[in-house]
Image (cartoon, rainbow, N blue to C red; front, side, top):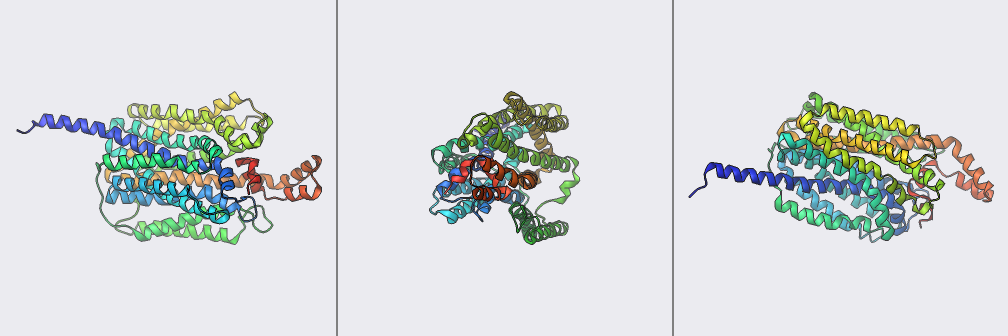
Length: 501
């Protein structure tokens, strides 16, 4: 005896309802873990470099430190569009599940570094790149999986939780890195292993394809020109931050100029290729959609501001405010992360609420209001004195977090809801590319501004100050002649970094 159609429909509706929450839980864990691992090394770098017996401030070693920071973001910025396209072609869940497996495997190998010195650092950088490949496969397809699983009236809420999980992971990583590295530097990478194993198995067991597959072929020339072109530009940024010749930065380095010029030429070639091939890597026609184009441009601007603010606040807290209030330099990385918790609290409070409201009130007003509040919080931070009262600082960064949450969820919902169903994977990848590129670019922009500001006054001020404290003249001169990037690095990661080795 067969079930009546109404009974089958009821069971199907119940299954779909359970599945959407399963998809939300799994993808939220994925983007949280991917974002966490993107930032967790920032605070843990002193312990990591001590663990591999490498002084990152020694001549030639600053590149290792910069690549530990930039490599992960660079790979994610380059790959998310490609793996999003692969998700459209071969199944978003298939690519997503494979990403979980790759991410977990790389996390295991990161914690078993068999080398010391430069070789140990290269092992970590290489497996961080592999980890970023897995993270790209997760983030590029998570929003598309949720968009397929949730109905229109709940999509903003689901994407809001997913987006806030990623933002929260970015800042919780700062605290987690300080706590775990105080125990063992390898624990920074161990933390991803049990979570990765569990959710990988759960994803393979429970997730299923619910969206449309686009079919088609891989656009090899488009993939190559995009990946190499964007990589060249972002690699040039990392070299531009390092001293060259008699200059404090490397922007006069012919290699930097060549990489930027070559990268821009390849990106221009990529656009020309995408307009000619029958199965392009990305659909440039998506930029004809106003919500898609302006949503991504706004996301890029917010990402640049957020990434730069993160580094400036860490420097402000670790290099100035915490020492002025009696905190030992060896403890400032951890306390800087703790004192920035209002930022994360703002994310967690505003993100799901704004996603819920965007489903009922629309996305434009909430996203615009969030962007305006985001800018206003920057103006407030600019007006703070050097030795500020913490409660004012906490209120301002909490408002900044609330603003980011208000913006992120409605903006993501607007972007993903504006594209055809069969292109949601590539649209999700393009959205993530704008966000990751903004974070990577912000590092270059804000580091360059700080280094340029320090270059004129720092050598004389530092040398004379050290001599007044009884340091011999030749040692004070040697320390004062360190590249400004070294001083910025010491401020970001605590002066305990200079005792690595």
